[in-house]
Amino acid sequence: MIRKILTRLLHLAVVLLGILFLSFLLIHMAPGNFLSQMAMNPQVSPEIIRRLNVLYGLDKPFYVQFLDWIGALFRGNLGYSFSYHVPVVQLLLSRIPLTLLLTASAVCLSWGVALPFAVYGASRPNGWLDRTLTGFSYLSISIPSFFLALLGVLLAGATGWFPIGGAHNVGGAESGGVAGWLDLLRHLTLPALTLALGSFGVLYRLMRSSVMEAESKPFFAAARARGLSPSILRYRYLFRNAVNPLITLFGMELGGLLSGAAFVEMVYGWPGMGRLMLHAVLTEDLYLVMGGILAGSAMLLLGNMLADGALYLLDPRIREEGSK
Image (tube, rainbow, N blue to C red; front, top):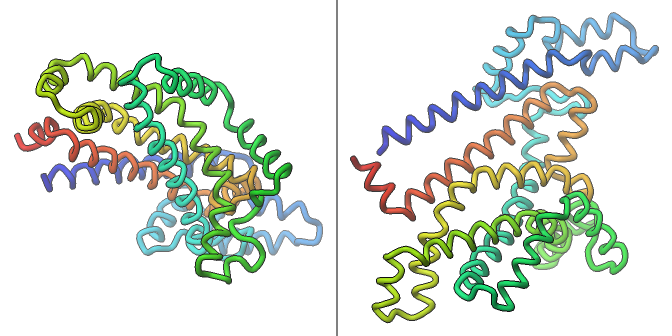
């Protein structure tokens, strides 16, 4: 078991290294860099540009820059942001928790609502609740996420219930206690709902079809013949067997939420990784872009690993295969 975990971690490390190398190569192939934009300023002399190139190591060949950055990465140094003039680690540590909070909230909302309702709706197919949720799922799938985000901004402006921009009101972060948490929750509600609604429809339809397939299996007929209560049948037998295919898709779902979170953050002004990465790409801030790619890729790979672990815990058949 330990050997398989170590092998999986080694595979993830190789994949992550490949992602970083390709990203660094693509950035290097793009015309110009941050200093090229600075050189267009007539107040900056060519001598200053030359010294900055040497200082940041941009005068070295591509592969030397990459190896230097990887070596610094193992020492916990992700480089220096050209545009913010602070270490990249400092910027990422201030933004990653807010992106993780937004993504985790959306996952809890979408999965926590879609899966139980799908089990209940599939056990009563074509009932009023099933028809309502099926219609809502089609609506959720067909409406683009950017349009949902714009509708959320209009709702906030029309009602004044939800603030737009930032994670706290002025002075809200310093207030602490219950008031600070409530202020954070009000800022978080619309971005999290927008992300959750975008994935609700897919989750509901997949879980509903998986539950209906599980109902046709012999094990469920045997469990129902034993006279077990509907709640036990629904959540002990149907849910545990029907949720396996969705757990397999959790990694891809997490990747979609992370990419969707970047756009939602820009629309709502949520101070997460999305706005930071947009600024980094537009200004060609090399090390900040690479730090963001590293953080996003690591979160996605860890999400896939968590999905595999959850599947291992929930499905005894996988545990039996792993013990052989």
